[in-house]
Amino acid sequence: MSLSMKELVKATGESKSTIHFYLKEGLLPEPEKPKPNVHYYDDSCVNIIKFIKHLQNNFSYTISEIKSVFAKNNLDFDNSIDFLINSLNMISGSKDEECFSKEEFLNKTGITEQELIRYKRKEFLFERAKGYTNKEVEIVLILKQAKDLGMNMKLVEQYVKKAKELAQLEFDIGAELMLSDENKHTEHYELLFDVVLSLKPYIFNMQTVQVHQERIGEIVE
Image (tube, rainbow, N blue to C red; front, side):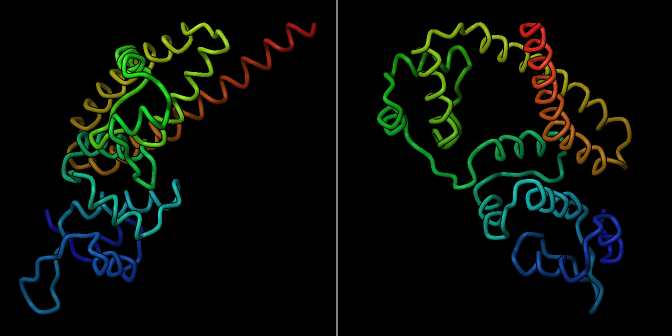
């Protein structure tokens, strides 16, 4: 389906000048031009523009950083489920995209290859398509400190178990939502993105605060 500029502006809430700027920066596919002064834009532009706005508003990405993201990641804006998975994977990494090989990662963290294999087997740690990032370095340092201080790792194991259960449920409900009305794919994608990236961490964090406050109150009493 193709959209006129007026329809694209209405669908995204973005101004005509901003859309032209995105085109100039190569962030949007070039429109079809069947006649002079008649331009039709691919409907994938709606998802692209909303994704750009999400990166800017929620993660403070600059246009140059967004261009780098698009250049380094295979994002299929026509497939909402695949796009959600790929974009979540991309956002979960670091903005600077600094990656390390296994050897570099082992040297940087000071762990052995056997320890790395064990962390990956337990799914405490993941190797990305391009290697390891500073986020994985941070996670290893936390795991090392937990080990040094004798922390019971059943907590982390439960994180993994519950995360996998929730991820399965998220996918099933998301797929069901996407199939419910093909004319609302954009709204459905935006909702899933907000639920996974905003609603879920909010509920998790606030429940943590609330439970800890209640338990501290019980101890004080």
